[in-house]
Length: 64
Image (cartoon, rainbow, N blue to C red; front, side, top):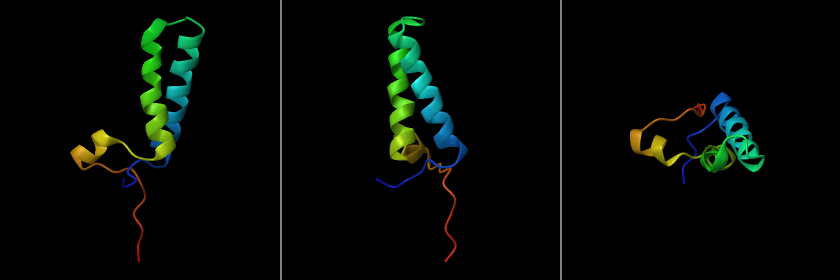
């Protein structure tokens, strides 16, 4: 898959995802916190299926 998540977007996804999972594990926000797996995975793999469908990319472009 083509990478389309980069920079601040990547860091924010990883932090928010990890935080949601941590809150779910501790029972603070219940089972809905497990939705944090999605932003965590998209941040770690640098690709977002929704971005692909919408033609969005936050990766820096490479100039040849």
